[in-house]
Image 1 (cartoon, rainbow, N blue to C red):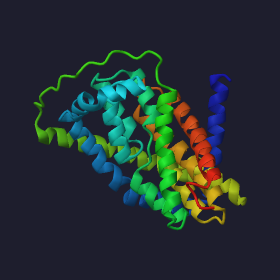
Image 2: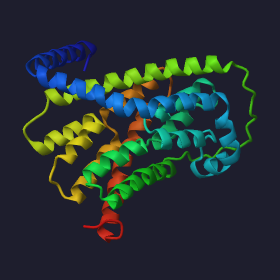
Image 3: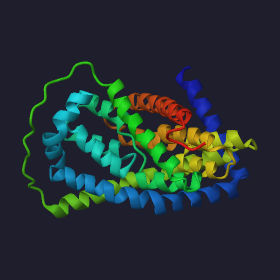
Length: 311
C-alpha cells in the first residue's frame, strides 16, 4: 500500500468517526465524562504519587542500591540488567504504564541500553494491585479465592515470560558504584511533578479516545460489545464483565485476557512514552500476546484441578 492510498484510507476513517460522533453525541459525551472521572478517581491517585516517587528514588539512587543487593540474583535468572530489579519493584506497586516511564528514564541516563529496556518491558507489565482487587471483587462478587488466584496468575505469567524470552548470552555482572546526589531536592521534585503531569494528561487523552471509539462502534451483540470494549480499554472491559451473567470460569478467562493484554489504550500510552527512544514496542506487544496465552493456560489448568477454584 503506497503512502497516498494509506492517507486516503486514514482520512475516510476519520471522517466516518466524525460522522458517528455527531450521530452518537450524547453517548460520546457520557463516556468522556466517565473516562475523566475514571482517570481522576482511580488512575491519577494511583499513578501520580508513584511517578514522582520513582523519579525521586531514582535521583537518590535506589536503583543502584537494589541492583547491588539483589541485582546479581535477578541478572542470573533473567540475563538482563541488575537495574531490572528497580523496574520490577516499582511496577508491582504502581502498575502499568509505570515500567515504560521508569525504563525510559534509565535509558536516557544511559544506565541500561534500549535492548535491555525492550526485554524488561516485556515482563514488567502489571496492573495496579488496588485496581485489580477493586474490579475483580466486583466481577466475582467478593469471591476472594477467585480474585487472589487471578492476580497470582497475572503476576506469575510475567515471570514465565521473563524466563522464556531471556537473552541467550548472559553478560558478566559487576557491582555498581552509587554516586552522590548533588542536585537540589526542590529542583528534582518540580521536574518530577512536571514530567508526571505530562504523562498523566497523555494517559487521560488515550483513555477518552478509546472510550469514544468503543462507543461509536458498539453493537447490539452483548458478547461482541464486551470483547470490543475490553480490547480497546481495560477498565471499561472489566466493567462490562460485571454486567454479564457468565459463569465464574468464563468471567475468569475473559478478565485474564483483558488484564494480560492491557487494552489498546494502555498500548498507546506506552508507545507514546517510549516514542522518542529506541525501546521496541514490538517486543512489548510480543510479551502481551504471550502473556494472554500463558495466563489462559494456567487458569484452565488450575481450574481443571479444582484445587485453586470453587466451581
